[in-house]
Amino acid sequence: MLLRDAIFEQMTLSDWHGGLRPKVDGTWNLHTEFAAPNTLDFFVMLSSVSGVLGIASQTNYAAGGSYEDAMATWRQSKGLPGVSIDLGPIADVGYVAETAKVAERLRKSGDYVMLDENTVLRAFEAAVARPLGGRRQIIVGLNAGPGPQWDAHGGSQLGRDARYVNLKPRAKVSRASEGTAGGSVSLASQLTEAGSRDEAARIVGDAIADKLASIFMIDVADIDLSKKPAGYGVDSLIAVELRNMLVLQAGADVSIFNILQAASLAALAADVAAKSSHVQAAA
Image (cartoon, rainbow, N blue to C red; front, side):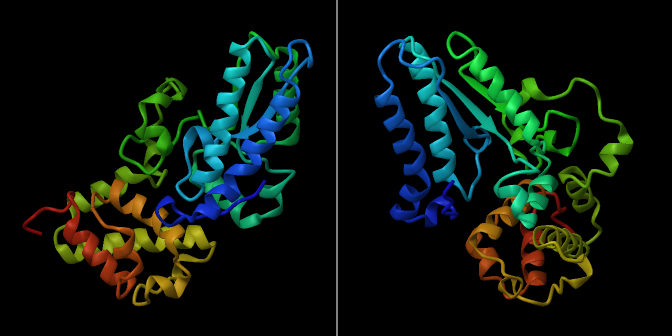
């Protein structure tokens, strides 16, 4: 696995190829080597749910996963075995298991179920058992349980994209769990009920502090809103996450440039409050 993280607008051609070519070239080379009928009993590719759900900072890696998914479909259409397993994060082996901060961020995102090695092996066993005529794509690790990821106005692609509606649990989430989820509904409602622009800015500031504390795994009390975003190591990748929250949850059209160039986090919060569609015009 080779990661060259950057948002697409800032990704160089070298970075794009660096994250994409290992999957594309490796998969194509194996396919051409075993393209004759009856050459293989099975042809299984370990792909990623990033190609299904999308990750703003890893479009190259996600595209490689999508290529493997397409290859599985194409091979089966030609009567050749081919299955792609789209894996979510694995908690006990591999890159995520060895990178604590990445593991914690993935857990907190709510989009994924953390897998274990045994689950991966069972998925592989299923792919080997039915290499042709069965499922061409096995998706393992998306969070289909109840939670704030299903909020249509939240930060998760699961809730915003109708393609995932069949994964949404039918059982209603209790009001208690909704109230403690900390999702976008509570932020939007807080802004709607704000009595003044200053109060709205305070609410947004608290949300920004919570988000940065979660990303950097520090105490929220250690976030000083008078400091610039760069003072906490906010780069273009972190700015993407922050912008998603502010646009989708606060209803404010702010750009990545606005975030990176803000005079302070407090100034950013005030700008968001001024632009928020949830804040009353007279506030």
